[in-house]
Length: 211
Image (cartoon, rainbow, N blue to C red; front, side, top):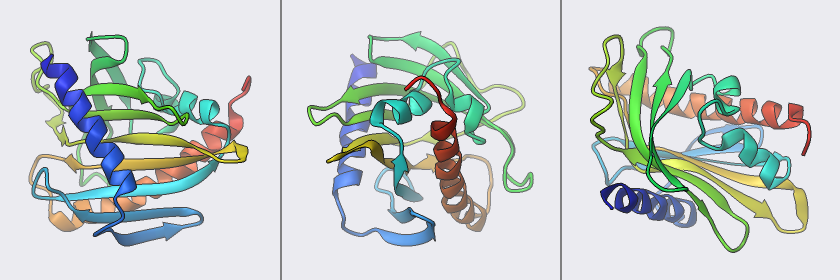
């Protein structure tokens, strides 16, 4: 139950971030993407929230985002190099390892993250992927990677009323990258990488056939 309890906590937190408008400060706007931040209550850093409406039906957008091994996300998301399933807990809850490449011109070295992830589906059609850090005996820290820690984070896909070919996508990043990174590097990395995320997601959705 520990895995499921942590996953539920992450999902509740994520939904709260998308619905609570207080305290957010806009740090980057690019085209139709807005990235905001506020201090995290989970760790001594910030929580970042991205928001945009993506051209594509909800199921098509979700196909690009869903957290599965050999899924589409490793193909289009430049910040996800590898995504591995460590343990399937229930149909909707899993423990996974994500590997990220070096970033910020090499200042941020490759990282890996171990998270419990839950997929939630809501009555209004909303689908979300929710994650938070978790220890797992099969995956201790690996040589060549700095172990980072995700606090409640993920993606929320919400149908746009009356517009079946458009989807509102919220993303929340709340990541302790580990290592001894200057705060200024972290604070500049997330807003720019999140706008790039939306740009790459939009291209991936546009190129996806069969939906």
